[in-house]
Length: 139
Figure 1 (spheres, rainbow, N blue to C red):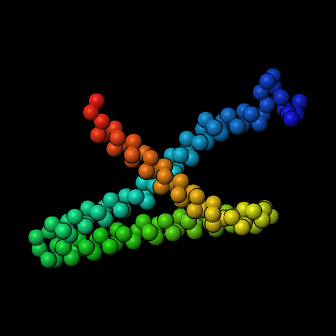
Figure 2: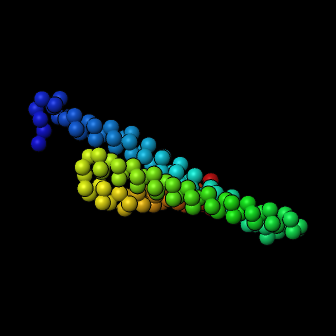
Figure 3: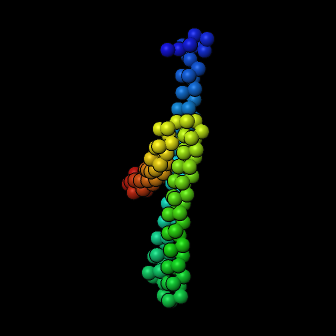
């Protein structure tokens, strides 16, 4: 049902807002998810490089330094994921309490986990697309 006052021809304000959100909001949200996923995955890639350096380094002090750096880089994404999850969870929980929305308050953890999962899924899809493009035979 549309309100006649808010109607301009065949376009309502709500349909115009929905169109703007679909054209601007969704790509921006996908970009935010991608950047968050990159920030989460990058330390793992660096950690793998240090593990390879640990395996091939000729001196014992070089191997111990590389192993120490690999452990340091392994802690960062784990703590980062924890802080992202807690930040989203606390934000949703407070919004649910402030608005009186019991569903949002009760499901804040589930929603936070879904957002973190979406970040990783978006990054994985972009990486898989890049790998497919890199391995394709036609330029």
